[in-house]
Length: 280
Image 1: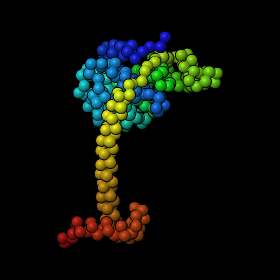
Image 2: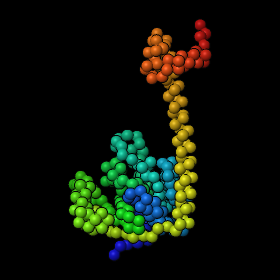
Image 3: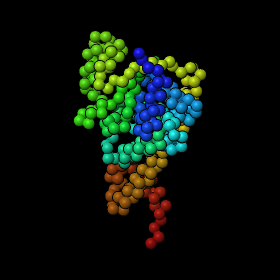
């Protein structure tokens, strides 16, 4: 018999209180209820203190802040996980920072929910060694709970190719939704099936309000960052153009290098001459 969100929350709290990390991936097609589900699971994980503004985050910065400041066992629900964890090279600075961050989540006993449309967008090492539970939203109100295969000799803890063949076989016979639900129960990763009811309309409207405010704020910061980067790039281009001019390179050739009109190069050099007058 399918379990309920409350029972799942009880299992997660038990794992977190045993000082194990608890990173939960929540995936599914857009509009099928990922955010609805994760919000309700977060509420069950912290029923006395949960609020959308307190527990739901949309940026890396907010995620780090919540992990640092929220009390022990408080859920951190990352609504746009692709902005926090993404595909990338293991040894880049971003990846090293992410490893440190999720180590801190474990040290601070925080269950972390990561909402993302495509589970496979997570880099392989993260899927294999950080995600303890994967909840796939099949359709609104129905989800499948999966766990990684802990066999140390397996190359893929989630058996992607094997499960793909399994699901294809069942969907051909029973249709997409029915076939998926029947087939996935045969998977090595299958744990259970879960049903839930959607949030009341008033709560969903509150969630959307918080999300829209967060997106508006983030877009403003991103726009300012983009402008700062553009200004820095133009300043650097002007500096290089000035050096090329001093080396005797024609303005027409400089304009071809930077792919701008020759008159623009002239203006760059003119302004640079005004800013740094010849004192000899």
